[in-house]
Length: 240
Image (cartoon, rainbow, N blue to C red; front, side, top):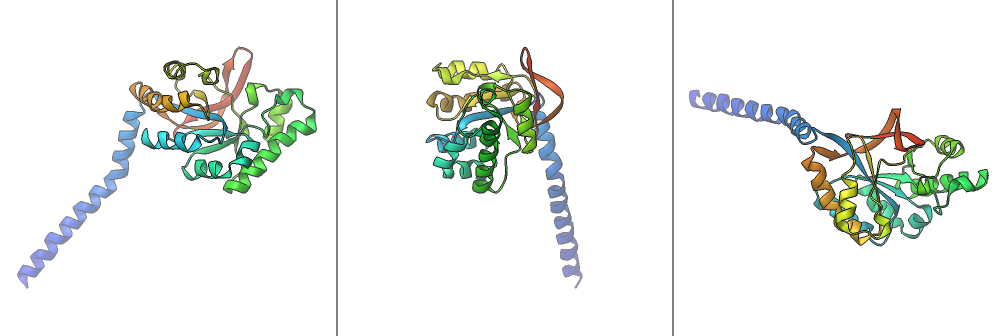
């Protein structure tokens, strides 16, 4: 009996130690995250998807450390490739509204401009179960009416602070260099469907890590953020 009692005491102590180590794990993981992200957070964003390359982009992000990004999808592209939208959502990424046909919204009449946003939000909700909370105007072209339309649909307007100009045919190295001009809290503009951008993904993530920056989600900013002289918006990057 004495021997069994000692075994029970030893087993109880071992279990207590094990549970204690598990209890410390979340705090340890948080501390590790804070060290890695000591420089802050930036948002990686992709416009114009989903495309035939979206699955490869998602795999590149996963391979780079299960990085999450924000995808501003075009309604007609999502309608053509619903599996792409669903894959983005299933990967834990944020989906934003980038209009239905990618027009300059400022140049449209009021009803048509609003329909561009409304129809895209409806489609994304039908495909993923969640309506977008973020909106990016095509070409960054916006005005008070456009912002009001987004607000009516429960969306925050998001521009960018680091334009990679990846759409222009520049090489991967230049895409990376442009992306890494981003500052803490900033938002990087990239585009879906480009091989050079696909190749840039791991290099961008690595370059951010060297500066203590981690990919984050987009949240509303109480203070205005300058996209370029004369245009501000109210969004920034934060921890997921």
